[in-house]
Length: 452
Image (tube, rainbow, N blue to C red; front, side, top):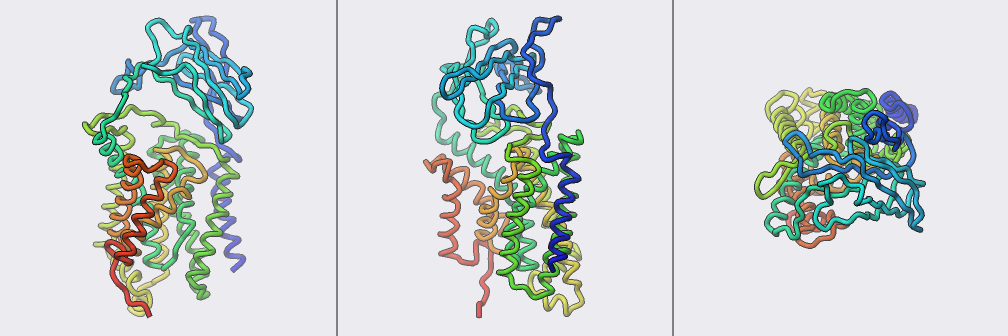
């Protein structure tokens, strides 16, 4: 057993070492150089620092935005960073891309001042926007500050518009949760395992996508496909080396749940060791202009993410309902002993479930990273919502996990519209979960089971 566990850990570390070129992966961009070019007199391109902490600013004139562009960059503007005592740390001038990257000493509170007199003729800050921004740096790496230019100032947003926008965002997030929850529900249904390391499969998929995209220079679409394939391999290794031996030795579900908690802590530490604690973005789709759909707005990447999630959910559910393997999966989920006595290879079915479940969970992590950047806590931050969605819908039921995920996703995002603080917005969804389970313990679409 110890040898098998060691082999699993070695396999995970080995895969990470293959996909990660070093202990930290960083996007390669030119070095900061505020010196003007001799040819045009405009500032030379500033480079994003490869390591250390920095404050970045990108000035874009949004009034010149088009369908294919967020607007025109604003070069030649002076920005100064001051520390908490008011001492100047550095001054940079925006380059032809409207960007500056000013290195800072580390974490703490900093002030960013924009020299209004250096703005090009005809360019002004939007409305009552201030020329000074105070920012608190809590993580190593880049911290970005935004100055609004060419944007119409909105003094108040109607309640109906805020509600519709929150609902649209919640539906998008709920679909991502549904894809990951479907994988979790499939694994629980066939094995009875409450897998607390499921969130780390999402993180694994996001980092795999990031490395293939940024380090290997592949398009995001190709990187996501590769991450899904690697996620499937990880799921097979996970089941074959760790969980199958534990099942064959008769280890109880409570003990296996504790093992999954330990595996989660280990993998999170491995991710932090290799990639650090900074937030990272894919090379494409970093910023997109939102499209107005009347009561709400969504960026093109939001629409793509929602379409992919719906397609994957329909495909997996159809396969489970119509194919021979899907019927075998449902048979093992209903009664493993009876399925085995009927001639089904239960271990083989469980292996397929792990491969598919881990692959679609890695896809959910890759899509989450596309929307909210990649960090070693990406999956862990969603783990509680995943369990809430699966439990709310009904443990082990496919449709239940889908319905529960959409409800949780919408509740979490709609809560702040009704006054729930952003810092505790997840608590509202969990409160609803408790109330529903008090009324219907088996969940919305779960079925009653006799105990004892």
